[in-house]
Length: 320
Image (cartoon, rainbow, N blue to C red; front, top):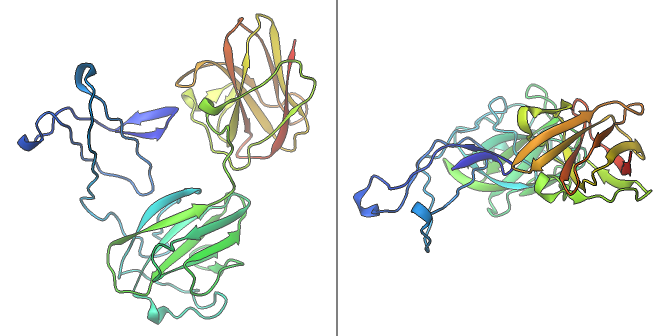
């Protein structure tokens, strides 16, 4: 069992033979999960054995309650589906009285608070698998909440425009008396970049003469060894690759770029990256880096930003 990301997994634990006698040679593992954390389960055999299996998941308890804005769970990931547990102890707070008409808190029988971070685009939060659920979105802080533009009254889904890295609070209200009941909350933000991870790096041509357009908007922060390669990796980034020629290669972001960039170059494999080097500011606030390549060696290029910035860029690879 792992957490983290596919290119930087962190082991939680594992099992060979379960303690229960009826399980025989099959495996079982229990663990304490964290809210909204994604877990990866690898099923494999003993000493190379193969075969068919069935896998089951059992929820041993219902997890924490997010009963007030101050204790809201999150951040909820965008472009994902997560479970949220409702509680009859939820506090509806102050400021919920005006969302395209008054919110009748008297009709609310259970609820939950979560929060997410804006990505600079439109965000949709939906829990429409349960017709008794209403979703309300708020900006501001818990002491002075304000309904977001586009928040409907009494709907199971809400769409609103967001500011990047700003927190937004969601109040999920049930018209039925439930306690510790899970519902599925679906969040959709900007479409994630296709080359958001190393394994999906886009191959670049050397000396093409034309910058290849790209964007880090909607990407995530990549996990690399020591979070550093020439520069600190702390902002969303996207991946490219280039095949070494045995000559000098230079990669630049100096054209068609509208934000403060950083660039990091790696060799090795995506699950075992080795830093070659990187750069922050070479041409103004944009980046470039050159190195002597090894013939037929694949190099991975991570384009990312400075101190959380994101934006659009043009990337060009030349012989140096």
